[in-house]
Image (cartoon, rainbow, N blue to C red; front, side, top):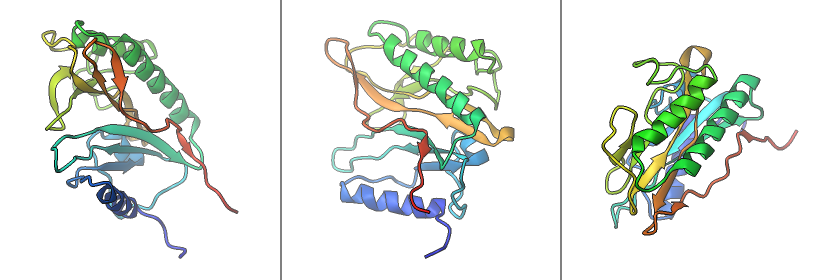
Length: 218
């Protein structure tokens, strides 16, 4: 109708679609654009119109109300095109994400995986929660968490706790990201995975990793 599509419009659509699949969101969905995308727990502003070329962090953790279990997944998008700085950060986050999945091993300390991610980001000049505790720039959080009847359960995947180890049966999120509020962009990629009874990694998040959402039409 010629009016701008807003973040609130998107959330309304997503919630209706979740209901069609028998799922609920509980109002916790993150759909954050621009500077808000650079604040990991910002849920975005409902009245903000979608804009070309700005990073959008979409973090969805729906719940099955009958069985009580959650899923958790994040994708980062830019509409129309991605600025070079965002694309470069996205490629690095995607590389780090892939390296994390390859290295996740039953019987190994969860902290080893967080340290691997910090190593990669620091080698590329980004501050991390390990190198710069309390930073709001760079990689500012832990790599992931357990998932089940709560959105956040054990084991935590953090460099500050060497106690948890990955075990068969664990369901966890893997979610590296880079955030730069003053530059107006954030990037995060997240999948939910689990370790089967033999300790093999199984990814249960089925969604493309495309950064740019192309626009059709004139």
